[in-house]
Image 1 (cartoon, rainbow, N blue to C red):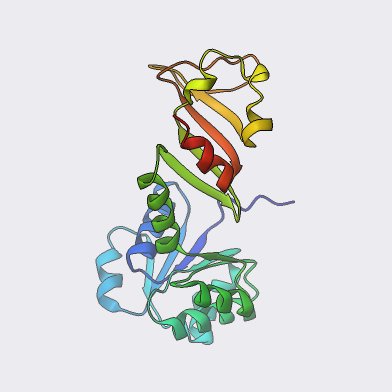
Image 2 (tube, helix red, strand yellow):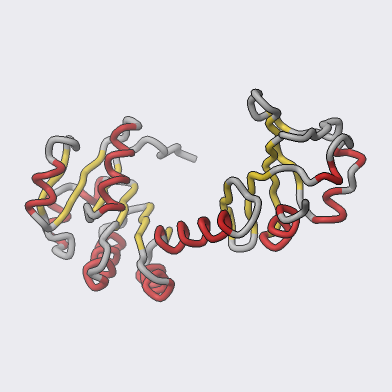
Length: 220
């Protein structure tokens, strides 16, 4: 299977999300073709991105002339214009772009984007709001949902598991979570094993179903 990780990427729509994405990809050495219909936005990005053009992404011929069908991956980062977002995504499907990512402003919008052919739907505002809510309501330092009902959480070990080797703790049987790695004070993260003993001041990363990691992170 071919690795397309560093292939050039088309980013369509240069609002806050699209601009940040395009600049970060460029910073990481990925060639980016950035497209927006607003000349002022394009002009403001011209000094920061190598390839940035003004074009109507709902025009099939314009996308062809820009060479969009030659790209393996494209991101539709159009924000509030839902019609343009959906039409642009459907045109990328028509142009047989292999890997289409599309930003949605709601779950309903996301479902439509999937129906017209988006391979990945991004809900940045929803996802960030959900993440911050988890961080505000508990003892978590970080939270990342990796699937619909599965998450990784960075937190402190509960008192009852201090000083006990993980292999003897029955932690997974009791709470359904796995300690993936641990970071002692003034140390770097290391993988956790059966012989790992947690200490006060440690930071751990746990994995499990969302309700289980939430319950575990609330333990004193």
